Amino acid sequence: MDVRIFQTPEETARALAARIAAALRDRPDQALGLPTGRSPVATYEELQRLHAQGQVDFSRARTFNLDEFAGVDATHPGSFRRFMDEHLFRGVNLEPTRIHFLDGTAPDLEVECDRFEAAIESAGGIDLQLLGIGANGHVGFNEPGDELTARTHRVQLHEATRRDNAALFGGEVGRVPREALSMGMGTSLKAAAIVLIATGERKAACVHGMVQGPLTTRLPASFLQTHRHVEVFLDRAAASRLT
Ligand code: GLP
Image 1 (cartoon, rainbow, N blue to C red):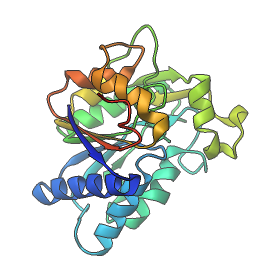
Image 2 (cartoon, rainbow, N blue to C red; image 1 turned 45 degrees about the vertical axis):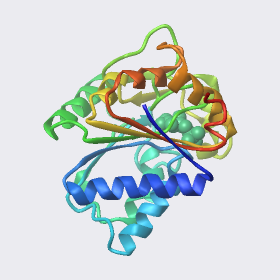
Image 3 (tube, rainbow, N blue to C red; image 1 turned 90 degrees about the horizontal axis):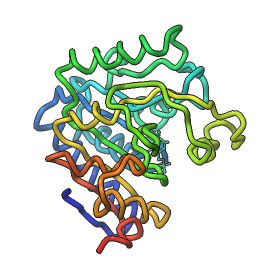
């Protein structure tokens, strides 16, 4: 893994945004895989700023978001779709038809997962997959456990993950859905290149496991070690346990 360490979260976000902007300048029709969570927010803000300055063009890009809550529609304030509108989409020139999302309210969630996989395939696969990491080592909503699922699938969220996402649901853990749809670990690993961002002391242990620990389904992010082209963008606090 190519690990890059920056002094502050702001510097980390600027470096990652510059990396994404350069990829889009190089090949404007990139298929981007996108995460939610607090980690990429500053990167998304920087991309909006670069776009306003005419330094990044999303008009030919396509995006595939990693995950969505089950039973939550795109207009729900807690949905990841709304989160993306607020933090990235409304500030860049990306046509809605180029934005791909899992629909948590689809009548058959298994069919919805198959539809999403097919959409990624027909885009020729993901070129650049952005990732965050959950404090328990999850990627997307691929939670730690005895096994991992390769393809996009339906997941039961862990209590810790529901607590981490409570802010989207008025701070009430009880209102966070128990289920979600997530791009599979195998689907993410098929991306041509992966860039992951983690900042803050809270991520230091899982970052250490991801980069220097054994491959284990107990820390889904450790599987990124099997990919040829992963760049990890860290601030000093998130990198503090690396040796
Ligand atoms: C959610 C998302 C993940 C994200 C994680 C980390 O669970 N499904 O894709 O990586 O949160 O969130 P944060 O960046 O807020 O720590």
